[in-house]
Amino acid sequence: MNERSIHHLLTQTQFLTSAAKVSQCPPDQGYEIAFAGRSNAGKSSAINRLTQQRQLARSSKTPGRTQLLNFFTLDEERRLVDLPGYGYAAVSQQLQAAWQRELAAYLGSRRCLRGLVLLMDIRHPDKELDHMLLDWASERALPVHILLTKCDKLNRGPALQALARVRQALAQHPAQISLQLFSSSVGTGVEECENQLAHWLGLTAPRSDD
Image (cartoon, rainbow, N blue to C red):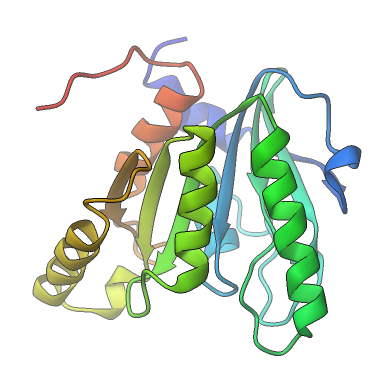
């Protein structure tokens, strides 16, 4: 499968199943990419934009379906996973702790997981729980690709400045991190994100740094 096919493959994505616990996940095989981020960072919108399916991943301003690990299949051996949003202030600390335990269990045990897409609202990036997720990824030697979402809310100059600030802030983090600007609304950064997904899904050869 050539690298141009990632765009077509993403448009074929279908909902597979939801899991409340790691024990309910599909068989741990093939390629899996997880999308994570604070509640309302834009995970569902990003998945919908990448797959060109408006209602594939359901977005909501209140916790509900996003309490679950939602699996989407691209083909027989490749999946995307929408992880529970974290940091939602309106739920109890006990429930937040339960979500964090499941996130940690998933990230720590899922051997087919090839990469983590971490979404941060460009206006509120790099929060404490984001660092917790990066720490988990570092322990697993799991690469992380950060999408600074909703970049269309800022002018080009401020958006680039925010990108530079986050890059500098994470420069010394032990996790393998890459990052970019992204907007589900206007499509900024979609192709760049597709290229990263293609690499993690085993569709392209590794690229050397420029």
